[in-house]
Length: 207
Image (cartoon, rainbow, N blue to C red; front, side, top):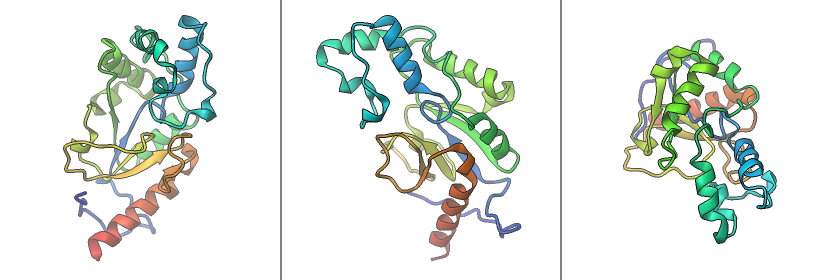
């Protein structure tokens, strides 16, 4: 990981500056992806028993279901409207508007590549819930390691790519990532976690 060496002197004890770059994932971070998955399962695959949320210990929920259901679940996930109608995670919208007052904030999300409307629906979701200006700050990519930033908030436990990765990974709480220490459990604690991460990054630069 290559660290960004842009660290201003602390202002009122904070290392957050207007040049700090925040990257924020969508699914499972600011959007209730699992709730939408369960809702679509109930509607389109009612014969398949839903796995309770707290029992989902892997990142890809669909992989936990029996092989005989995989094709049917994939078709369900490729339906138009899956990504357009996700509900916001509690506190997420408020937190992002707080962040943008103090730093540069970008949405950084991966597409579900077999869903033909996924990318456009994500853009529309951002415009509706965050405002049209945020659509110009939305990055849709299958390789987040190629995006420059100071930190990335993402529920995925392990993010791989071609790199070089510049950001520090902060996980957003999910049953499958609770073994990772650097985390945001609820959006109202974003500031304390981000400050700690920036302090650790500065310490590495100064070492």
